[in-house]
Length: 201
Length: 380
Image 1 (cartoon, each protein chain N blue to C red):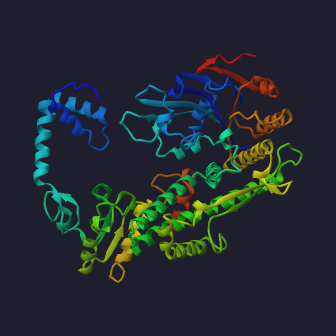
Image 2: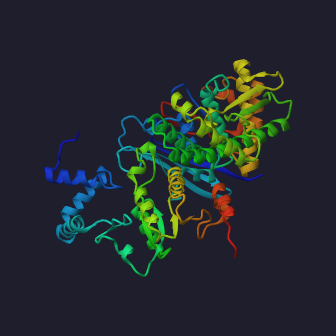
Image 3: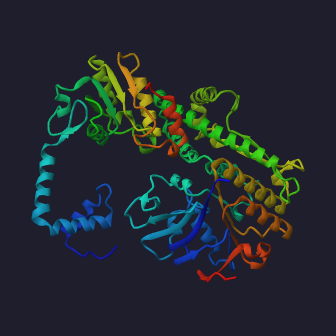
């Protein structure tokens, strides 16, 4: 271990920052230094914003979204079609779909995907809550928007199995040509998926 | 003939025994000559990082960094494709910043995956470690086969690693004694789709390669190889449309859960495949041929595959031939150089003795290596 170059308060700040995604020990040191230097313009408002978030932000008990109200803004929005529910792995996926303004619908955040290798089972996800939500009968369509990974697809398959017998239409996102993409550059798997799910012009 | 990629310049930074090394290549044949332990194979390894995977030694990245360095290493190459110059940088950081894998940048843009390298160049190698291929474990032959598929079909690597992940997930559930039928069915469905796609791709490669070998000149000093793939599937193998093969495999996986749980692994699938190679003219298994004969068979196979890659992908592959001259007599060496020359791609070779490459004459650029240092390439 290198000798400590600053007091324990700074060391602790660095250690905590290093736990953030995308930050290693070196960039954490840089961030900590930056925060301490920009005390008034950044450190103070950031501290307040974090305290505020700690106090007010929580998980929506209906869909699992992150918001300051429960149910969340999306679940309470009367202008949204609450009979269509988009199932996503994570809040970040929900945000991505919202940024794209893809669909004026409600969401359900699974909180991950089934992964034996990471020790994540059905009980760690909000699958039971989703089944309950659908059982109430108000949801007419589920859009399964999980990632096209092994775990994502396994989870989708598992979900479909759980929903069997319930009166709900399940759809999934199309796999295919990205907007602005050139066919020449696509891999064969994507191309054949795109060809299979072709649509009428 | 398709487009050619040619490496014009290579820069190593803290890679293996090289602190900083710059090399320029002017010819289609490049020979690294020097005593054992000088660092010739390290140069081929650096070049092999221009293809997906962990290079020709399949070493952990930590081992590729120069001893004593803390930060990591980088390999930078300028590749000419047609007349366009592309810069490829592969770097690995070992200080905890950044990902645990390597970062690939192509013309200053970070590649989404290492598979993008296959757009730049197709690289095929032959190393002394592959000498025991015909007698060694089936896993080595599967890896050899998968690399051959990958240089023609860039999606194969993804397919194989996804299958592996799905299979390990299944094994984990079984070993945890967690027989959740729905969960397992979801995983087995993925395994069936990916596994059959893998097997079909391998099968296609073996068929194409068999054709390519049949068309090769019978008078060459490299004996022709017969290839038989056992795909790893029981009852019915790969017969019938892919959908049926998938269904059969999926049903058997569901049926055999308890057997596999007992064995501690999945007993059926493409991970159990093997490639049987025979010496066609002698009608005998390749593994029973003499050491020299096995090397000649392997060289013949690599050349056939390189030619196939060039025809199917439209890119003449770059060949890395480590200690290639060692087991070949003068006639075979000369013939090898001509065959490789006909392929049209760039070839890098190593050898302890410059004289082994005499037959190349002024077609080759000889670079002499000693103790991690390079003597300036000779001007002719």
